[in-house]
Length: 343
Image (cartoon, rainbow, N blue to C red):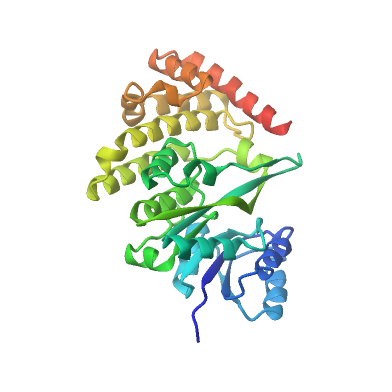
């Protein structure tokens, strides 16, 4: 029996409200030679009933149930079970266009690419806004390293779900997602960075084929405990990876920007409205971030023009060690971000 062209790997955890829309979009794919692997990561709502309903409708669906282990373990399980030439990761509260698989697969075959990246639509729940970053337009035809550098600099997101990966690429380099307790806040960037680094060629589809559902509280207001520490670990891992494969000289400047940018994001993270820590604890955490040798030593090393005016001011306050001002301005900056996203 012919192996599927594409394996769609779906991680499910308590998404019963959105799961039917997601699964229906998979069954509606114009490319029929696909398999759908659904891993239920110990959901406690009605997700399993919905999965069973769709599995009875279509024999291409394979269902795996397991105790809750976290997103990394779920995706690794999907990779192990996949038999397609290419594979893609789908979050169970999102959905894809009917030609997602066909457009991505045809682009991969036409350009002999081990990795294909498509545009996506950010669907802002509660506001009705849709944002479509133009990734393909900005990077198609450019060297792969231009995209990798901008990934490190934070100009493009390291999401795993707007990409089609050749399975042999993942197997050859033994690429996996970090497990629970290992870079949980940024596991997508860890995986995507390595796939991009090892892929011989990457191609782009200039159409928003993936719909990313964003809940305001989850993306803008929610506090991520351990975010800065995860970034430090990722920085060290990426530094070692680039050095090991002879890429450090080419991408070291971008990696410097990564840790500075991550430090700024971590400071703002401490000021999020859903962070219930006391003001004293937030201030203490911000001081700790600013005192980090990896963060502080790279601030003068990066080109300030990669940052916007508010980031530049925050960096100036950090360099001058004006910690009360850093905290006050960061709190105001974060409030502005949350207000703007609500409009």
